[in-house]
Length: 147
Image (tube, rainbow, N blue to C red; front, side, top):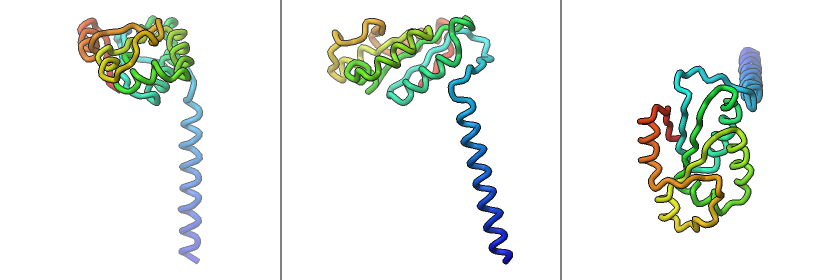
């Protein structure tokens, strides 16, 4: 009887915890988030589609224009290839640009991955080397993050 009661309590606890956790996850998704940092210039270096998607969602949530924020999305690695070859990513590019983010791509990555630069979306700026670009942004007062 005690074992049965204990098992029931444990099961209920797990169900309550997972229910609260999942509610907390869905309640914050898509809402405006408040940035409390002092710097108004932000930059993120990303290398895959999943992080690109998350970054665009974050940019949209930050309401850059309303809050006087500048945001650079620096594209490196395999994302540099996918951003050119995967037309499904055009929606994310559109959303990022509409939100006020500036997109920059690493020419070095494009060269290594043998990507045809003529196919690159014209809204994306090319920088010779993303690492140096990030150092320069840092020198200009940007909060930088490699994500």
